[in-house]
Length: 251
Ligand code: ADP
Ligand code: MG
Ligand code: MG
Image (tube, rainbow, N blue to C red; front, side, top):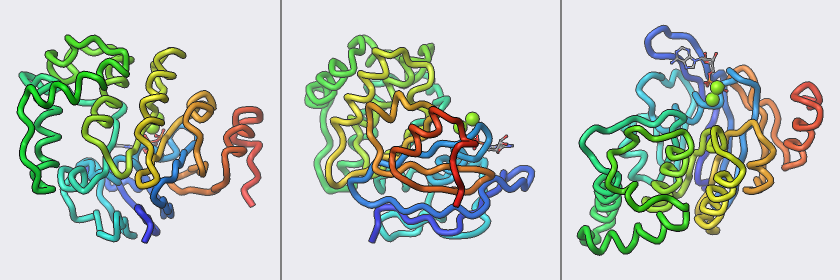
């Protein structure tokens, strides 16, 4: 079965009941890279948040199967342990918890689930340190509290550090290119490409061709009014870049 199979997914804002997702269908198989593009407000971020179980949204219909298992009734933490990772557009700060401790806890939670012994701090440092270097991050960064006082670019690098340390079968990357300069974007793209194996998959949300040139998608989807209205190969992205969303024929 596919890694992720979304069928007829509808979801609303919990507080107001306003429907945002209006019947999303999306299939992602192992090893595939998917990109979702679409105008502001089309529901891209909501889709990724609903997939990870963000508490502001309620699934009102349809199914989300991840590795054949229904995600809808799983807690966000369980989804994450099952192998789903999401970068947040505005990640939360966690007062009093250093990046190092946060990553170590996350890794050990997964090791425990797989019946592996916990890593100690020294052992873990040797795992995490090369990844910090690869992302050209200051090693002092590990001692800082999670997301506290990070610049936009630091947050983005940190999200990718989390992904590269924790690992994931499916990574949902929502606008990881926003707020990154060209060099930083390249570092992030190299890190993401380095994580790709025939077994794991990425779903990127982006407005920009630049990211798609660096991390080349197998499929590009266009979202509008809470639905995926078109799916194709990377030539769709080029077309949008040149002629805008209006240039995409919807039949
Ligand atoms: P995109 O990521 O494609 O720009 P979003 O998924 O962020 O779009 O938002 C889709 C639509 O849903 C927008 O009109 C947005 O204002 C609305 N929306 C999303 N989340 C909420 C929320 N928590 N409360 C109210 N409206 C929301
Ligand atoms: Mg938006
Ligand atoms: Mg968004």
